[in-house]
Image (cartoon, rainbow, N blue to C red):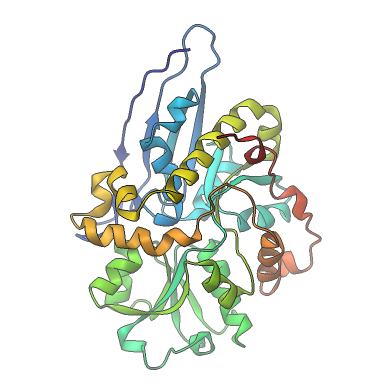
Amino acid sequence: MRMTARYTALAAAGLLALSSLTACANDAASTASSGSGSKGDGKGVKVKIMVGGLDKVIYLPAMLTQRLGYFDAEGLDVELLSEPAGVQAETALVSGQVQGAVGFYDHTLDLQTKGKDVESVVQFSHAPGEVEIVSNRHADDITSPKDFKGKKLGITGLGSSTDFLTKYLAVKNGVSVSEFSPVAVGAGPTFISALQKGSIDGGMTTDPTVANILAKNLGKVLIDMRTPRGSKEALGGPYPSSSLYMQTEWVNSHKDTVQKLANAFVKTLKWMSTHTASQIAEKMPADYSQGNKTLYAGAIKTTLPMFTDDGVMPKDGPETVERVLKAFNPNIKNAKIDLSKTYTTEFVEKVTG
């Protein structure tokens, strides 16, 4: 089977471009595809995957897999699409617009309570990779989540994983979800702009947005969950976050394709574990660094500890996620969740090499 490589990129006008480290792929839906359908035997399968922000370091394996040519090597024609928040990737998946989503594992639990069978098939990480940033003007009066009361806190979108984690940190520290205001500001330039203008007092975001904020001295880190240790301190255990998740029905009816996707992504995770942040940065699209390769490589370096090297769900990870969600989400708190149906290791366990 012969595959022809092709790469396309599309950025739709939407949000005002700002000269910052974060890439424009986060401002509007974008696409990038690798490979074309096979010829002759008809087995080449086109797969669309929606990513909750292609340029976010927490979702780096998606674009990196394409750039390394691993989709092509598996005979897949993968089209990567991008939306600013993981909750939008979830919506695209359940509506049937795409076959897979790269986003946080916690969406699989939330969707189960809504009657949707969705499962993580490759677990990219065992920590959230998220950082709670506080504006410099509020650095003295927000010294812990106990101070969230009455504050405006930025999240990527309502119902997003940043929304979930912010609410958990508040409730865990004695602040009810009705005592602060979550503000959907996306990530990248829109998050930074909201912080500069005072539209938010702080908020939860990821690299490279974090690196840009710190470089510009616009805010300070309050809680760092980019490492397993940081995750345990803030959330009480490993928190599997970024993953490839898909509708269970599609997985069961396309096992050969899912196995190829698992092969490609696990190969990328292993590659990441044996290369430096600078080497990884060099493989990514040039515009992701926004002219500052050193800062971008630094952003990757600080986030690298969150990634697994085998795509396997971390032990006790699903239980941590369930406990976190039950702390503030009444739908999940009163629901009986079958965690065994929210992820599978069937495919990553068959990956060789």
